[in-house]
Length: 337
Ligand code: TRP
Image 1 (cartoon, rainbow, N blue to C red):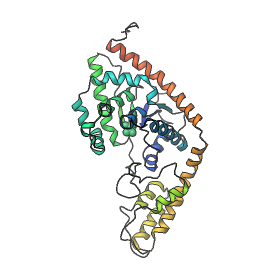
Image 2 (image 1 turned 60 degrees about the vertical axis):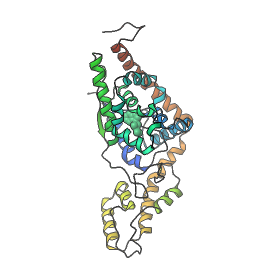
Image 3 (image 1 turned 45 degrees about the vertical axis):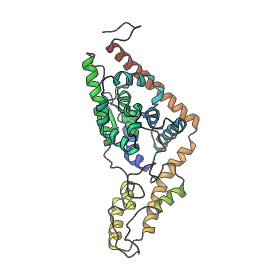
């Protein structure tokens, strides 16, 4: 049998995961684990490039994110869940790669450029933050990642990685590093309950997998619908209506959605009725996830992280050894040619 391709994916642990993550990446990771050798990286070092002043929160969020992974059905026996900071090879590879990338190249990375602007970093931009694509190249190559799964915002990271791989291999006359390709998540970004921007923790417009039932309900009933749909009998707009966006994303019964849309557009379907339907659907979907979350102890989560990280560390050490050999700095080992 052909070996399964190694797929690498990960998240910056900046908060619990929400419905946007669920539909965008978590569901596909659950499927991917049966067809690929999947590594899921909890990018705590990457989160620290931004949240270095509150490391305790990064640690807590890391464990919460792993809880979310397990609650949605990621199986730690099948997928390798690893904590980035506990893989020393990643830090060492980052240092070697930094020599191969110019500051101006990093400043041109569109994803980083956006984030710098959004966060208003300007002259206070830490080197660590600007450098995170290089560190991500180390994440990817440390395990010989062939595929990187994620959204479009990860494409510049993979391009950066492949430039480093090519330059490294050429410079040190080796082929020990492998280029990676994107395994694109095709699901568009989920809009927030306000309908203005994508769902995110910082905008306070997301429904979290860990939200209790009354909070889910409150958020559903606060969703933006159609500002001109005042009476039940008024015809309403479906486009840009967040309740319909969520029904499209989460309701399997497409015929039911179509008939609801028709009724809403004609007039005669009230927002409260529509929101009740979505609330029931989300409550049913999230109840078992929340229940599973509740049963996962901190000790168990730590065990899962320890096991996955230990497995991953062994893989990374083989690659790190090849890299040191290629550069020729394996002082105390015989350099294998
Ligand atoms: N950059 C990703 C994010 O913004 C997280 C991440 C770090 C990652 N290292 C990775 C994703 C390696 C895929 C592969 O969430």
